[in-house]
Amino acid sequence: MRKVHPFRLLTLIITGLAFAGAGTAMAGDSRAKLPRFASVRAAEVNVRTGPGVRYPVEWVFVYRNMPVEIIAEFDTWRKVRDWDGTVGWVHRSMLSGNRSAIVTGGQQALRRFAEAKSSTVARVDERVVGKLITCRQTWCRLEIAGKRGWMKRTHLWGVYNGEKLK
Image 1 (cartoon, helix red, strand yellow):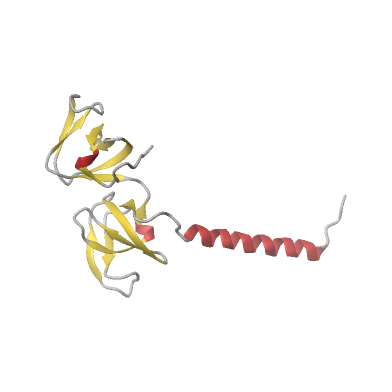
Image 2 (cartoon, helix red, strand yellow):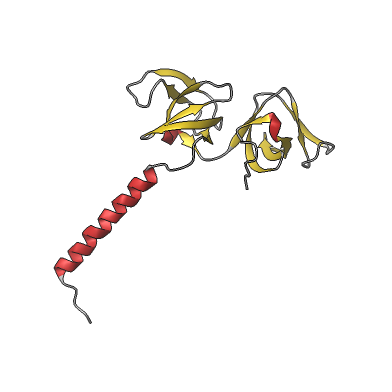
């Protein structure tokens, strides 16, 4: 059996810890493309005038899963825009990568298939939020209030034109 010198073992441990710390720092450093969509993680999220707790709360998100567009980043803070164009800063821990969308343009049909003539699963009012399941071409599959169906992408805010979700 080969004997490991204590100094070499210590060097290996220190090197391993240094790389482990670097990995953690990289995980916290977002290199994701901007802008991008996310959703609000909690039922009550403070939106501030600047990136930090020293900035005053300007308003509060009161709906969980509300889609937001991340338009800038500063340290652990994300500058977000909501569906009506209001902008503010939110801590990244209050955001989720789970995708959602909000219905726009009045009441819309949630269709059984991704076709305009497909049967209607439900009529969905404007400003209702649904979970995005997938998007292809001009249609997105959603789950809204336990019902699943397809809606034209043009009637949704929370997904980019041409963006594909799997």
